[in-house]
Structure formats: C-alpha cells, structure tokens
Amino acid sequence: MTDSPSTTSVRAMVVNSYGGPNTLTAEEVHLKVPARGEALARLAVAGVNFVDTYMRRGLKPVPLTFTPGLEGAGVVEAVDPGVSHVRLGDRVAYAQQQGSYAEATVVPADSLIPLPDDMSFEEGAAFPLQGMTAHYLIHEFRKPSEGDVVLVHAAAGGVGLFLVQWARHLGAHVIGTVSTEEKAEAVREAGAHDVILYTEQDFAEETLRLTDGHGADLIIDGVAASTFAGNLKAAALRGHIVIFGAASGPAGPISPNVLMERSLSVSGGDLWHFMQNREDMLSRANAVTEGIESGWLKPHISRVLPLADAAEAHRLLGERQTIGKILLSTSN
Image (cartoon, rainbow, N blue to C red):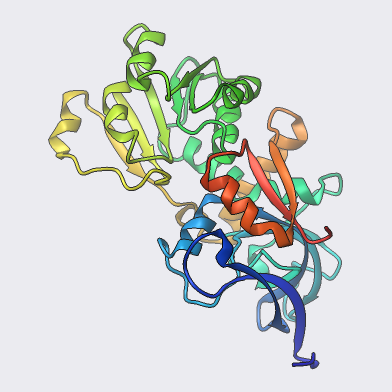
C-alpha cells in the first residue's frame, strides 16, 4: 500500500495476538489525516507503563490488532483546521491515548499538553501519565499535611518516585517499600525518610515500628494482592488506603465491617476519571511541569531504548528490573 493524501505511513510496534513481550512486532501502519478535533503528532519519545503489559497480555483487553502506548512527546505535524488551541510545530506531550509506540499518532487535540521550551522530549514523555497519576493520588483522597505518615508501595517505580517527592514536598513523613537495596537507594534520594525491603521485612510490622505504633495516615498502593491485607494492619487510626493498580493481581475481598476496627477508608482511582475535560487535564499537567521546573520534582528516567526494543522494555518491567521510567525513542 502506498501513501495517499489521506494517509501517512509510519513505523510502529504492533500487537497481533495477546501474549508475552515477543508478541510486539515492528510493522508499517497507516494513519489517516486528522479528522474533526484531531491532531497528528510526530513522536520523538514514547512512555512505557505497566498498564501496557496488561493490554499486551489481554488482561485489560484492547481489540486486536493495536499499537500499545498511552503517552508520548513530539511535535504537531498536522491538525484539523477547526482546532485553534493547537498549531503546527507545537511541542507537545499527551497521556491516556492509545498508540504511542510509533513514529507518529493521531490523537484528540484536546489531549495535547504544551511542553515548556526548556523541557526535553524525554522529560515530556516521562511525566504525563505517571506524574498526573501521582498528582490525583496525593490531592483527591487525603492530601497529606505536615507530619502525616505516607506509605508508598513500589516506591521505586515511575509513579512511586513521583509520589515520594510530592508527599515529601508537602511535609509528610514518607515511607517507601521496595524489593532491592538498589531501589531503596533511589527512593531515599527521592526524599523518603524510611525504606522497607518487603523481601526481607514484614512491611506492616515495620511501618508500625518506624512510627511508634501510629501507622500510616495515607497508604498508596499499586500492587494490591500481596499488599492489601498488610495495609489494613499498617494503617493509622482513621487512615486512608488508596488502590490504583494491581501489579501482583487484584486484592482479595474483605468484609466492610473490618474497616470499622480502625475507622479506615478505602478508595480506588483511575487517572482517566480525574481528567474528564481539558481544563482538569491541563491543571494537573501544569502542576507537574511547575514542580519539575521549580526543581523539587524530578522524573527518574531509567532507560531510553529504541522503539524496536519495545519487547525488551516490557520484559524489564515484568521482571521488576527498572527504577523509575523507561522510554522508547523513535530516533534510535
């Protein structure tokens, strides 16, 4: 198939069948010109997230065949003439739109986030999904106050490192859980006061010991199955537990009456529900970029791999071998 005025051919990583990392294959895909309210972004970098592996495996089904990736950064190359807030040549990032493992993609223009001139495309692809996720998790349920204890699970992950920095910035006493000493060091550098190696210690008992029996006022958990029961023990009186992922599988069921024993609150969140319009999305994105530009919030970029190495990126994520963010570059 050759290009026509209505299509653009780009290199992309495609999933044709659910399965392991090797189901990601490089193919040429054809993008239509932007329709009403859309823009075509020529991508420099794509962000890789754990949810991408769920989609690849069919655990969060996306109709086959599809190009994974929910965030990226690049330059606007085409735009619907009816769109006035996005122009050709704009440097942009975005999140929560499928198809970023590609040289270009077509997305709603309202999903595009203007990038500051001094922000690299790598930083631009590293912050949208995980940075805005950290923002709503910190601000929408129980915003930490000075001296509150905040427990962050998987603290060396992309979201986890943003959460550690944000909670510390707000004056909280931050405790992170990690699996290795290498990850523990990264979490300490991000500002955690204490780090628990859950592979060697019972995190609930250790949280209570570190806080003289008080426990954690806010627990933020993207792990779920292997951590939720411990959360109920580690939480402070009138503490709040927020679940936003299930890296170890879904948490087991409990009786709501169990929450009465310590007057606990349990919430669940998904970023999409907290940026239903452009104003909310930009408010969160601007809060993240302002933190980055002020210097107290720093994306931790673990690796930048070539787009063709998407399978390796997924393998590293699945084997918990990354600290912070892993990116795919279209220029390599």
